Image (cartoon, rainbow, N blue to C red; front, side, top):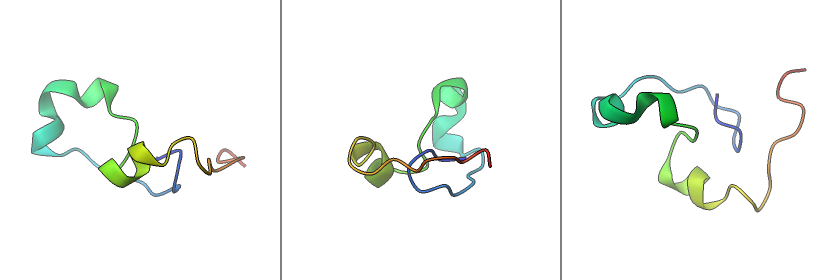
Length: 43
């Protein structure tokens, strides 16, 4: 689950080598990570 937009995302071939390190669903979310984080995703 992306911590910025809250969307689920799945394995992609481009991420195969770094799948354990993937946090954001897209480049856009990675760039916006400090602008407006989603709170209480677990609730």
